[in-house]
Image 1 (cartoon, protein in one colour):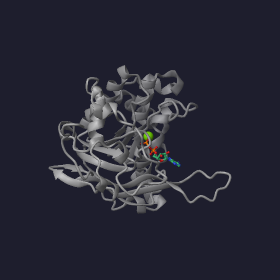
Image 2: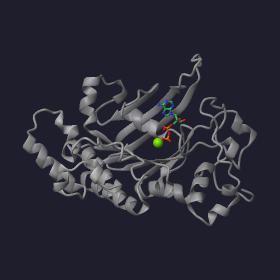
Image 3: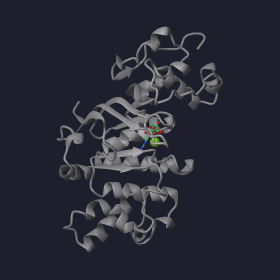
Image 4: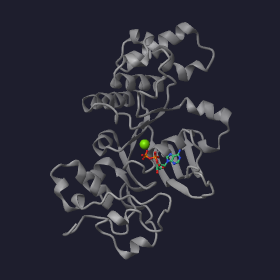
Length: 327
Ligand SMILES: Nc1ncnc2c1ncn2[C@@H]1O[C@H](COP(=O)(O)OP(=O)(O)O)[C@@H](O)[C@H]1O
Ligand SMILES: [Mg+2]
């Protein structure tokens, strides 16, 4: 299948915040060799606990932060990470983003009209009338009223603000949108409206999504393919349905069990320490070891490679598969 997005070997370490004695060379291993690809018009979901490197992955693709290494093939561009600033600008209009917090991501001093047309105003050759018409059209497209274009962000609810963020993302006619926890800060009752809007837009416009969330139910709802991330690595990846029916990594199994109130009584969930190892002193072996019901001495030797276990299904575990007996 023709891939629209191909990311390989993505790595990012942050220097630790400089303290009083800023001699430390210690680094946070935020993203630790992540690779994935997305066919055009499809959604790859990334799920994982807070701090596992989801947002860093998004920021790297947008080149808000520069990667230590990695390749990002996007449409005709062999490697977005190697593009000089001038050429990057052209690519950026094809690649947009929607972030978690619709309160802080919209400039409170700007009219909605100017916010939603911001990505296209820099083109220079657009008249004021055209911008106004475009703003009205964009707002209607996301279920708001053209009259809203003369209001300020504070006049809207969280869900409406997220619609404004979506309108802004759509304005430059992107083919790829990165959604980083787009509904996490919204009331549950509003979440599905925004998710359904994103799905409708994808069907209508053929947009490819990278959809990031810590809520597994939300990610399952949105994704064709799902990547489960832990301590900066993808530990399992596959078709969303397949992963749900047949999770192979103990961490994926744990996440799925926590979805179901009945299954929360399961010892796998009840006995889980929730302990995530330090991303500064990254251990040699598997980082899930302290929490793993299947751990063996071998797991301390090296982090297991992501291996193919079935059609479109990969897992990074020495002892993958169905739980047995005492788990
Ligand atoms: N700018 C930064 N400087 C230093 N450490 C950072 C920075 N941004 C993120 N981190 C660290 O990188 C790790 C991954 O963070 P992040 O990508 O935000 O995770 P997630 O989005 O999955 O919650 C965390 O340990 C976080 O503290
Ligand atoms: Mg995040």
